[in-house]
Amino acid sequence: MVKEETKNEEVKDEAVVTEEKENKEEDSKKETAESEIASLKVELAKKDEEIAKLKNAYAMAYADTENTRKRLINEYEQKQKYHIQSFAKEVLPVLDNCERALAQATQDEAYRKGVQMIYDQLKACLASEGVTEIEAEGKPFDGNWHQALMSESKEGVEPGMVIEVLQKGYKLKDRILRAAMVKVSE
Image (tube, rainbow, N blue to C red; front, side, top):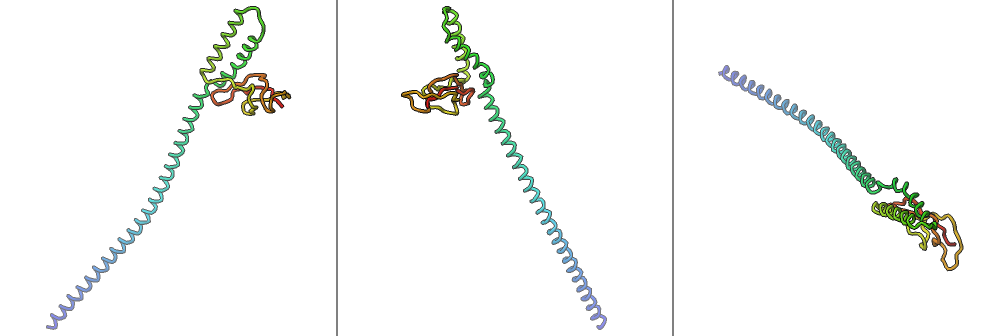
């Protein structure tokens, strides 16, 4: 009986040892799993930071692209709107010369009519592109559209009014091509 008791104790001891080993293995597995979870959480946090950085970089690149697109569209529209500006500036002296020719007295009416037709046709072509004359005479002086070359006291005219246009001014749509050179009342 003593042998049986010792065998039972040995079996119990072995069961306890086996159970302890299993507990240690489970604890070891839990620790390993917990350390893996912790490392995965750290990795996940790093990936989240990287994703946030990439999203920010994408948003900045997208904003830059949109700004560039808008700027290019605006430049294109401005170019389309004012494409004739340099040509119109070069043609304005031709208009001035036609006006001078028409202001001269001449006996040859056919010559005068020819110059008038050229002048009218040139003005119509420029007007079709948006080039118009700046109204100045009898208007208040405006430094944005007029350039005062002289001033003169004139009775019956209030100060700051344009009393004579020395050279006509022209604008292209809403942009000035050449300011009107004027005489202003004092």
